[in-house]
Length: 295
Ligand SMILES: [Ca+2]
Ligand SMILES: [Ca+2]
Image (cartoon, rainbow, N blue to C red):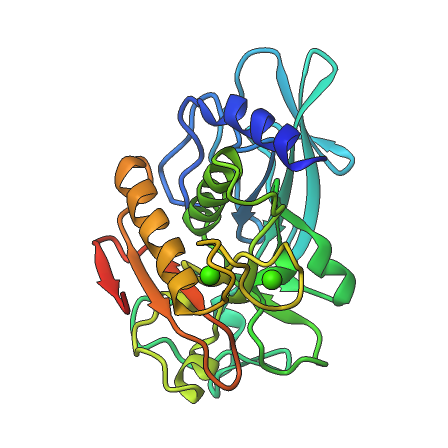
């Protein structure tokens, strides 16, 4: 799907009616008349749990070989179930349903099937999306973001890997990308995500903030890398140079956009200059209150 078609479709779907609770599995909260946020979307559920939704009249959710009903329960093992929301025989949305590996499977030393999670200093998540091999990186989260973009940089050759990506994180990134495209700043079809999820082990190893939102999949360090696609930030402020001013330009743009988008939870924005190992980038997160730095 082209970016603009995706955006138009996404905008149509995003005018939405209530959606599933962001955690996907919040006890007690059933989402009436479920609609995905975008025409490509995802949900998470723990093994053996129900999806707390009801479907609008005339819709069906086809999950693998099953048709969803209120008594549907996720399988007992972590896996990915591609699902299609249909109305009157037409596909309305593609939804990946990630059956998570529960955090209770992490052993006493902080390992999960050979992948080092570490220990959460507080508020451990309920589980992790599991990737069994490199091909699982291609699973779609939304029209312009894939699961593999958010992986922690540790243990590159080890599988399975585990990741958390919050729906609000993806919504923030989609909103920013869509707005930049509408404003003709870029034709980029995604952001380069320099850092998405970090396990507590990795977060601690790189000396990051103790309660970093990266550990909850609710933060992303990003830049626009489209013209040229060379692993570095593009010249967003069009001054012929690639430097901190381009990160600042994206920071200012994100700040204005997120102030308007009151439907997105408040969060942090930070601007960073290049160093020996990376170019300029911007951090965005959903910590629940405004935080600003680096500008
Ligand atoms: Ca570039
Ligand atoms: Ca520039």
